Length: 163
Image (cartoon, rainbow, N blue to C red):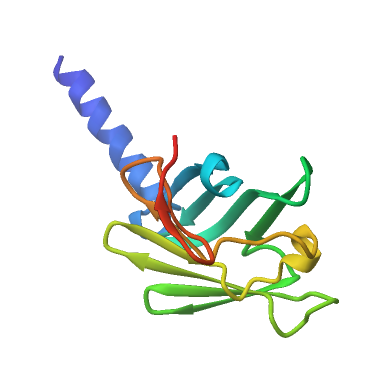
């Protein structure tokens, strides 16, 4: 029994020397969904991936109504490794600037770290290249740490719904 304990301790010591605590990549993911189809004709989801305590990726997918039975599907994907995006950290927030051809000055997504989640501000995001001209992105989406339900601020309404 003592040999097993010593073997385990030696294995742990070897592991910690190969992978020191400061160099480990701590990854986590937070996501939520919203479904406002009946009330406002829109639904979607947001996912935020963290690496070493910082936002590393953002994915937004939304569905927006247009006239008749048609609708638009929109996806915004941000990743620190992409060269067509500029990421700027400032305290507990990050601003992602997309380098776009059609609207090079106004395509920003801001993410703010709150005590109980992340606030994704899409108010300055250009939907033209991402989604088409008729798509109306939510102004803000709050991604909570504890549940899968988003809090969404549309142009005129604030609603908390989801799955």
